[in-house]
Structure formats: structure tokens, C-alpha cells
Length: 400
Image (tube, rainbow, N blue to C red; front, side, top):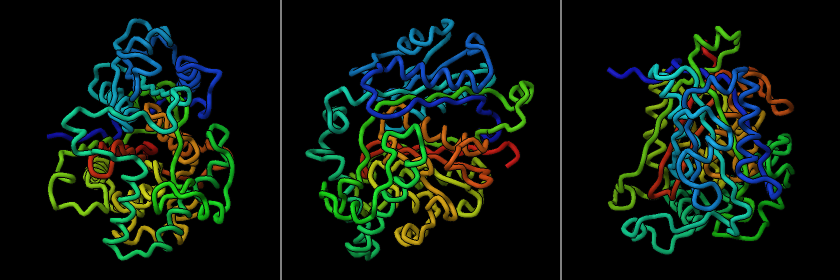
């Protein structure tokens, strides 16, 4: 019987590039920036790496296909390199591949690295047209802000939330992220923004204003994983282990039938429930110390906190306004600034989220350090509310 991934793999080192408008750097320089930090943090030689997973989502534009770009850039020792893409969950997919390789006993050391360089593609948002012809029939004329604005409208309708209340709640989500991102030297946007500015910003797709939408960015992040036993043998006393990795992918039930009212993420509910079971977490609202979730739009974060079974269904907007997810709240969310301040270089985002959890668990997060966190959870959502890939990762101290 399957027993899951809990405490079978440890994170030995992680690295993250500065995110932002990196006009001076190519994808290769960003990859090296993240890799060098991860390798130094792990304290191993590059030749000890036995396998690697490489994530990008729009490889045709700036990186190229296959595992060759990673192997050539890092001058890896002709080890197997697997190129993965699973929309906005791509970075977490790379991590999942590396973790499973170590857990299986196939290798002792594995690398996961994700990169995306979007600012010089010429797109204001993410490039479109990635679906197959049949898939496109389900998404005709949809835009990202429009799709997620519909999520907000459906949430309002399902739970009787007025326009002013939802506007204030999603505004608070963005305000919180900017407060946190102002303390992060690696964030793309490092400026606190006043609530009045957020609430009165130009409308993109009602109720989503300009500050309710994350931007695109350039960036890379990396992780080196091994077993807890090897980590201890290398002198690690603060071993951070993987507690759960779960993925749920839409099968058409949301958009093709009448059972879904558009007010929540079906896949996130499934992935998070399985992740808690895998990690042995009975009451996530009490046991999880912090979150990094997929805040592509502010309403996404609000709804996600219900789908992760933290806020009661229909009451997440009240938790947000009560400061439950603020840096000094009960469970901080987006303590590094989130996608709102980092932007969304797709292949790197999942690993960037894990990087923040890893720093926090080791007490190395500097001015944004939380008090004694023990369990961190990350979440990615690729696609639209009605058709998506949802991934959930839980990491924590080995004794947690």
C-alpha cells in the first residue's frame, strides 16, 4: 500500500535569482544565479548531482526544448535531465520529479530548477494560444482577468457577498502582499501601496482593479534534494523535509457539466485534502504555520484559502479583512510578497514559493522572518477556474 512521500526526502539547498525586469540577463544567467546559491547552500560538489528536472512553460520563446539548455548552461556531468511543463505548476513539477527520484532510491542527489524570462517576449501578459484546437472550444474569447473576474462574481453570488465587501477584501489581499514584498530584496516590486490607491486604481475586469492582478517577470529558482540520512551525515542539524506533494488536474467536470457553480477551485480542494492526509495533518488551520499560494489575481488567493480548508467556505473574505493572513496574523500568507510582488515567471514560481518556506523554516528570512514556523505549504494553479492544474506541496522541520 502506498505510504506517500512524508519525511523520505530532505531539501539540502535552495537558491533564487532576483526577480524583475532583467534586461541585462538571459535565461542562462538567471539559471546560474539560482543554481550557484543552491549549490553553495547544499555544500556539495556539482559532480555529486545524479539527475535533474528542468521547468519552463513557454520554452519556445526564450529557452528551447529538452533538457539540453539546463545541462549546457550548468555544464552538468552528462546526467539525465528531464524537461517538464505543466502550466503554472511547472516549477513544482520539477521539484516533484527530483523528490520522487531520491525517494525511490534511484539517486542520492537530484536538482530541480525552473526559469522563465518573459519581459522581453513583447507580451504585456502571458502569451496565449497554447491549447489544442478542441481544448480551445471550451475557452473561446476568454482572457485571464475576465476568467478570474467571473470567479469573483460567482463567489459573490454563491455566498451573498456585496460588491463593496468583495472589493475591500481583495484590496486587502493586495495591500498585504505589497506590505510584505517591501521587505524582500529579491522581489520585483518592493513598495508598500496604500489601500486608497488600490481601491481607486483603474478597473481591469470588475471587480479586479490594476492592483488585483500580478504582472509578468523574469526569474529562476532551484532546489537540491537528498535523503534526511545523507543530510544529517553532511552535518545538517536543521533538516527540512518534504511532507506531501499532490497534484490534481481538471477532467472537464467543471466546465462540461452543471455540478460546478464557478465559485471555487475543484482541483485545489482535492489536492489539498490528499496533501493533508499524506502529511498527517488533521487540522490545517491549527497545524500549518504559513502559506504561499497562487495569487495570480487577488480573488484567487481569497478563494484558495477556502479550498485549502483553512477558511470556512463563504467566510474567507471575513478572515482576510480580520487580518488572519497578514504577516502578524494567525497564519501569514504570501510573506515574501507573492506573485503580486514577484511577478510570475511561470517555470520558476513554484520553486520560488518553496524557497521562501525553506528560508522561513531555517530562520533565515531576514526582516520578514516569522516566529518559529514549523510547517509551510505552497499552492500553484495553472489555467482558468474552470480548467486547471492544481499542485500542493507541504514541507517542514523533520521533527514536525
